[in-house]
Length: 267
Ligand code: 2AM
Ligand code: CA
Image (cartoon, rainbow, N blue to C red; front, side, top):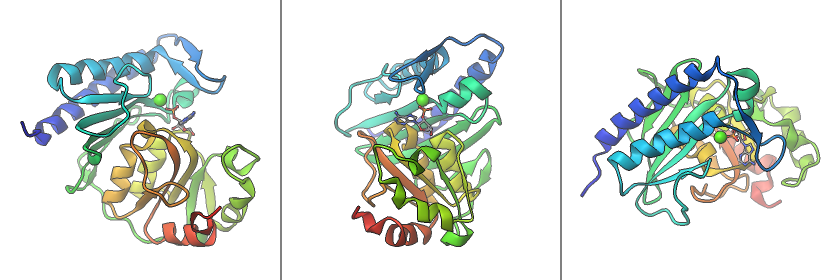
């Protein structure tokens, strides 16, 4: 049976709002925080409960859809056939724990590897960013305009300071000239929000050397829908099953940075 995308879209919006309401209701409670792989990799019971909330809703309504979730309650997925919901229940968990702000729920829905719906919910500001590919990007009820071209000297670049000191993923010296030439740098600590900030034009580009599909599955659909570009730092297509580096940018700026600062990916 063909998928009813209108209906899936309606449900996804209702569920993400309800999940956000539950997260807001959790603020007065004491959090149980655990470190996952290392002391900076945090998870709370709210991350886990939120992912389980979505899984219950999706399984109840769409038993043939599959789920790729950060907290691991979904399916084991190694190929992109069928409908896949890619869920980060809380993107920016460190911010959630330390600040109770600057985090978002991120959901990308793909069919046979093609992006259909993206939702990023800034829970604290009650701002829902939404794309149905081919139908535009909305911030709540407001349609966002297409992105303008940008150039390096006028650009604000979001990136984490980790990548401009010695690290395992990139020769950090490669990024120093770029950091020196842009108008300014920012770091928000939530990849989903950083991509939404590119989509709204609040910043011009975002770089990370290590992200997982649930961090970018929704955001890249919004940036691309508005004429921006999203690739790995080497310029390759992003994979929704395996994570990678990510370079998201306004039109024009992507080519300029690839060519003049990232040596067209040949580093
Ligand atoms: P998270 O909060 O969902 O873990 C912080 O700069 C951004 O990078 C956040 O979006 C964070 O997502 C993500 N991030 C942090 N550690 C990561 C890891 N080990 N792999 C992939 N993404 C990570
Ligand atoms: Ca997360």
